[in-house]
Image 1 (cartoon, rainbow, N blue to C red):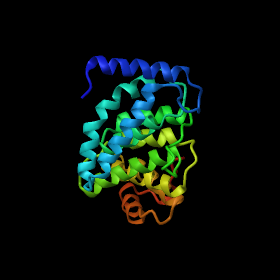
Image 2 (cartoon, helix red, strand yellow):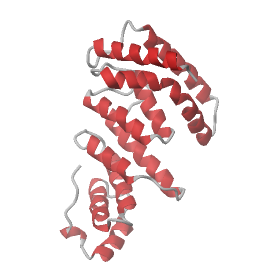
Image 3 (spheres, helix red, strand yellow):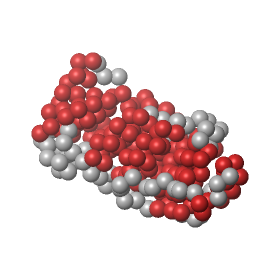
Image 4 (tube, rainbow, N blue to C red):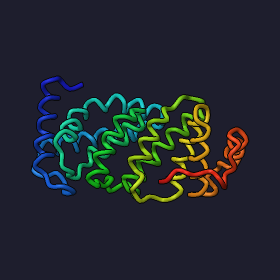
Length: 226
């Protein structure tokens, strides 16, 4: 754990570097950024030595506070310079279950059109939508709660972004299933939209169940956009 004084220094350095950098250009001439990249590489090596997914998530939760000052500084003053530390930590926050913090980075990343690091083939919006939809599915499979507002915020954030229809369908499916107990009409809209986007997304029985519950046939049901 870094000291408060060190955290303050990193936060200020990150803000200054991010403020002076050009949009979509990599951060340059910043020794603290280079140090953060070195730490990130070291921490990746630690993670590669862990086989358990749960243990990896626990280790990420342990490591994330060390990156918080850098992230705070960039988000406070940045103008969209490409930052692989920032983008990697966005994913780690999802893996660690800190979804609100991940979305804060995602909002910045989409606003400034930041790309994922080179090892990721997917676009930023695709990664955000798919990773959070998958997190919701894992929670559902494990009969654990998941906050639907996280997915609704994700859908709104990525609505105008290009991504494979299958990925957006997964997001609408998980939203629909989470909304079903409290808002079956909205749930039906999301599930219907999911099927429109990808007919093999696996929501046919759910739609039929909700049609009976809401007494609204699918072909007359308005659907959500996105």
